[in-house]
Image (cartoon, rainbow, N blue to C red; front, top):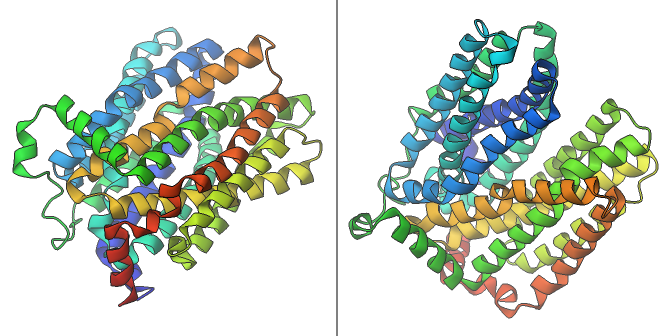
Length: 424
């Protein structure tokens, strides 16, 4: 039973397509940052480009959840992968003719289109797993996939570093586009489980509503399940308190300590290594089914490790803290993802997952802007950002445990039913 889903060609296609897409995403972020600064010489232009990618996610992610519930998730995934691949190829062709001073005329539209398509991809991807594997395999499948996605971020960085050797930006973007096109080919024969739901579409009566009404319905539904509402609020708090300091404060701290870019890369990679091992533990422990309360402990450990980053003085210390950070992150992220996929009714899954995606990384620009403002205006130092964010997360652990609905979360009928199915 433990290995049955790994022999399923349907799961393997979904798994490989998701990993290919993640590799393309990770490599693109590295390549894009270097490309913009190298061609334009402007960090401000890089900020605008990242904003043009991030804002569409913020505005369209909830619409993406509605689409995932109304339409066939398979074709949303296929279209999003193919469009991202196509826009990379078109941008690569544009670069063969464009002068450096005209690059933004192709760069900005590419960034906007990529951001919009990404907003539809994530809700469809995160809500598809229950239709790909059996309920009894959901925890292990999530653990394997999320672990692989962490590895993809590391290999994406390595891929980008190798692409720079080509010394040809047009060719570099073409290679990245090919990863999305490979994902498209892998997704074409994908089949969702017919015993779970026919094609991922919502019940007929739901199609009569406007998209806005569907979004409101999804929000009300998510808030009606107290544990799901708590998970969403926790993700929102963590995003605001963690992402800005980690992505903006960490480079500043590393630079102030006299470390170089290679050492910064090691610190970032160590988070992924910790998350990889944490994901394997979660998969082995079946997402802590029957012991879900332990998630509160891992949230607290994550916060403590995050606060300790602020007192980093040596690389060995930093690598140890980063490893614990990644380990604990996986050990609360994957169980709550599995829980939400299990207790959410199938016709609401896309909207609920879009809310989780929005809270987890859709509002990241707000965290970036806040951290940048605090650092640039001298309101806080980089270590202070880590102390404040870490203490906040450390306190969030016992706060979640104190909520009665969270302690009783495993009494939800759909969770109990899934546990019984897994035991058979």
